[in-house]
Amino acid sequence: MLDMHVHLTGHGDRLATAETIREFLDQARRVGLKQIGFADHDVYYNELNLPLIREVAEEYPDLKVAVGLEVDYRPSDEGKIKTLLEQFPFDFVIGSVHELNGWAFDYPEEEAVHRQKDPDGMYEEYFRWVEMAAASDLFTTMGHFDLIKLFGVRPRTDILRLAGGALAQIQKKGLVIELNTAGRYKPVGEYYPEVKIIQEIKRRGIPMTLSSDAHRAEHVGRDAGRAAQLLKDLGIKDIIGFDHGQKEYYPL
Image (cartoon, rainbow, N blue to C red; front, side, top):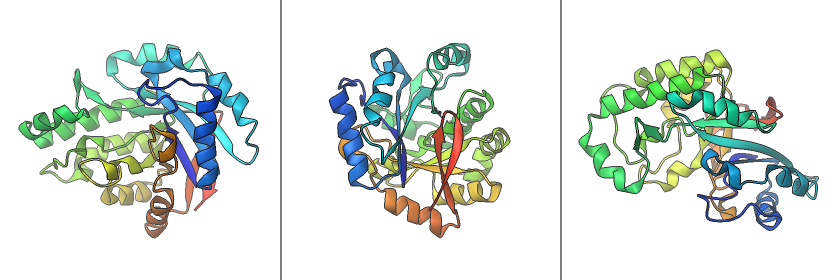
């Protein structure tokens, strides 16, 4: 099993020390992971010590450790993101949409705003940004694909119609979509993305990976077995790890 989306520094609430790295790697070993992917938020980039992750990883020869970054995508920031990603040889880069035109929609205090908006319009705008992120050639992986559902607000229009353009662009660019288990612990109470979308991902031949989106060491690998079984039940045979930007296939 894999966990290709963990946050060593959380939301900037701890330092990227050797001790902190070992806490995450010890947990990965305890839950039997084959690969773990560190992907801190890009806003904390200057507080990271990415070479230290590779150095500490040498103490864990039984565990493959990938170094990545989760980047907040905004269409106006593409040049800035490209410059940032040139600063380190990342194994993978997760592109995520957490904000729409300055609206940071995934904060708990924004739930009421979700319920005031037209749901179809909200979903259409969100997936338009995901489609642009996929088209940008900046990322290897798309994070929590249907994050906009996190407060349980659902569109009237069929979700595959709303997400179709984003899925087509991801397929065209050969990107990976994560099954992100953190959604089960949000108000929506289900993984990102929902099963109907995973079935379409499989139909399109888009590869998937597993992630916990852990912001604490004890959450590394959370629900990995359950998530892997869901993918197997849906007919998916492999999940993706990364090494210097190259996909590696792990059988389920």
